[in-house]
Length: 526
Image (cartoon, rainbow, N blue to C red; front, top):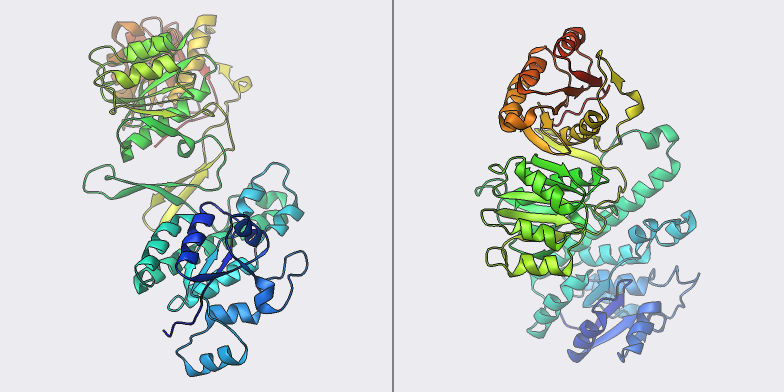
């Protein structure tokens, strides 16, 4: 391309992060800067010489800045191809000076609509028109124009210009990022507008067309196994408490499996109002407990299955204190990661100065861990498509629970039944949870037979099952699960009910003198 003199860059941005140093670097390379409204004032205040867009076009900004870059001298300077005779003639005839670089990012539409109480008028006013037009024009003509749409690109672009011109590969990469940005921007606007016109029934229904937008947060060393590629993507528009909002304070890089188990821990511990701890292995709680304080809750949770707890992920629902940290650091414990709302200064020092913990154990902080947030949809990929459902995170209506046996549970049994039912919801099906005194004593998870799960939970519990309760995520199809629980010493049962053999199961519980509650709600977790 034939280089025009002077070199020119058009700059119009909402996000001004790092802009002043980047533009100063362009000026040092001989660029003349043309800018608009607030961006121009920002650069002038930073001591950067700037030409106002109106001085170049000969036409003022009008309609409160709505119309400023929608002008032939702007888009001609972006879309022109100076080495083509017809374009060169148009450029000469109309006094157009081609731009070498366009630096544009857009009005913060998504951030605006995420604010509480955002009005439709505010949302509409934050729909950028000129910005996307310039971005798309520049990306189309990237062979001649470099399009810079993010502060994260400034350093690389400036470095490239300092050693010459933008190479074709970098131009193409910038153009691809620009088209991705406008596509996401338009999708967000379309989704918002569709929500405005949807009927109450349409708003409640799952969407007819699903458009998902996730941004890569980080690459991962590998997936579930070393031969699988993996990355962590986050949902830019989700503002609730989530794993994406957690801050890692210490330890090694998080793995794919770490993130899965951390998310499982994050799902469990907020369900309890008392201090609670959950010990996760392979997406299942091998231990979980509540206590008068966090140290008691952790001790009980870890003792639920100390063998399985080796190499676990641990979640807490309140600030991790020194007493709990000291228990965590006891010899023989191996923990992969911890997530909690916060760490006391003493606890954090203890966890980050012990030789086996320092720079190894991943410590994550999520201050809003106990915030309910907006209920999310869950997605699961299947061959050729996607399964979508509401997340199973709503409180169970305990008013619908029914005692179906001759004996009602005692007050202590009822407390444990409620506890066990919460834990059971987070265990892979077929799920059986044995519990006693606010502590999981045994878990049977992921078995093809509910009886097998019951027998595994009984084996894990051992003598601790005596006087305890059993929770089942779905109905007992036969009395054999009840018989196995009774043999282990279980005194109370909680399950959804709904089997054609419910009466047989009730009769079995009555024979053993057990109390049983039907909840009327199933919690399969495949």
